[in-house]
Amino acid sequence: MSTFYHQLQSFLDEGLAVAVATITSTKGSVPRSVGAKMIIHPYGRHVGTVGGGCGEADVIRTALDVLADGAPRIVTVELTDEITMESQGVCGGTMQVFIERFAVADAAGAARSSA
Image (tube, rainbow, N blue to C red; front, side, top):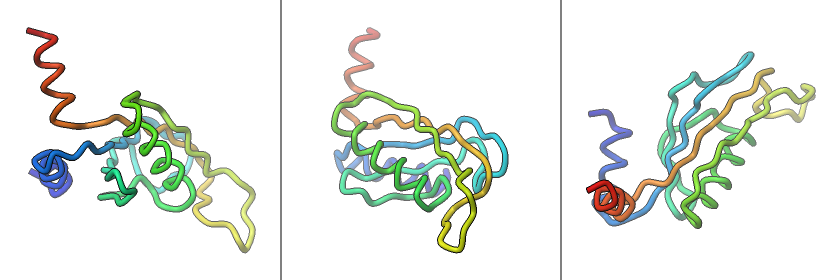
């Protein structure tokens, strides 16, 4: 089992709800490929990366909203701004990032509802 999944299991074992962000599609040049994942802890810490920079900050902010209300979301990360000396994380592409909440209580509720 990868470090990512060990860390996810560790958070769940602690009783924490976390968000998992997964890149689901890309277009053009982006820093990570489809399937790259990141865990976002309720206090904004994270494990893994979906690319860094301002785009990843948007993913983290949205993940905190997902943790608050439980509703999954898709974030479009645009890395197509004009490149200047002050530019950070401009690769020229876009990517879609799906963010969902993971918690032991969520899994237990799903198991009861499907029985």
